Image (tube, rainbow, N blue to C red; front, side, top):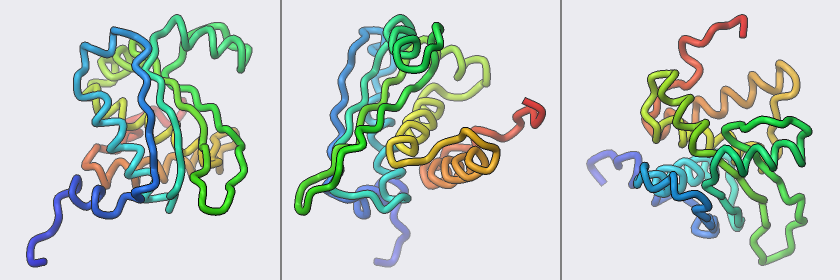
Length: 175
């Protein structure tokens, strides 16, 4: 091969064929962003490659603020919408069977509002949230500063592989 592979081709050629992503569009609001499903699949496959994840299944639910607020209240005791929630399954791996990683739920209105407020393309922000959610499914967290720094570094690396700018660039370090 004499020419370098494009990022999409590179991902497709190195993505574990055993990654099964079920996308459930729960809210018609997502119709406003027709490239959403492809962007999140690409982001999750990039995260799976980066984390050497294979033979796995997960679901992504494209939801709205009302639905995610209900989940946030039920599971985190926080009665407000959020951008993304992850629900790791904790299922054990059985030889020869894909592991069920869990579910990622993303709210359209919050995602769109954040992207607009930060001056980012919607699909870049969606990709970041998909990567963030995936990292939670495979065991990463950001409860402590060292955990947050490590998780952010992984997100930055994975998004760079997708030619998506650093989502943390320019952020207020006091936040």
